[in-house]
Length: 212
Image (tube, rainbow, N blue to C red; front, side, top):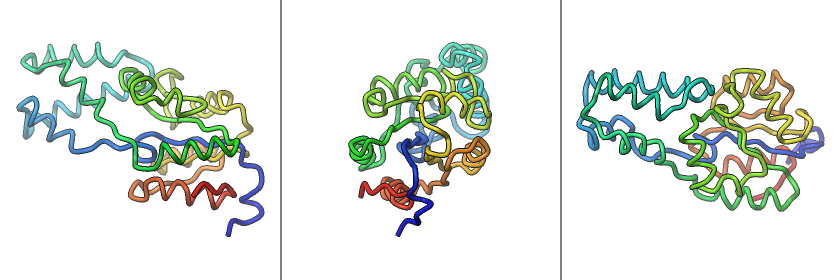
């Protein structure tokens, strides 16, 4: 059972997106091959540059679609740009996560999304997948202008959620982000993506919140 100390004071929860609340079905490299005919070293070099641009966009430094358009024009002008950008919309929630969040909010726990995302994908998550309604607060790195390795990200999300760090439970699948959150005073827990919604529910239960 949860310890007394674990049960005390959790008033808000913050979840990462990829690997915690959602996943990307299939392989990005397979999509480059199937949809765009890129494979081998050419595909790997293109993928590397794409993800470097995504990291810049996720930090709020560049608009993602414009950056990808420039890369395509410079290196692979034959590619279908809209179809390529649509790759970042291939997202699914883990089964049971939407319902779990509903039960959590019904318990009076403020739920926040805390995720590294570029602007194109953040808009898709918020509007198309309905995260604006699913969460009390959405915290996207591209809008904050800092990633989850930066103190500034957690300072901004703490303010947005409106709950003291020690009363906020942060769940992420990346050890570096868990460490950064703990350094800012949050209760941060490393999540195993293979556990899905059941793993989130168990973490919540260990901190005194039963939504199983």
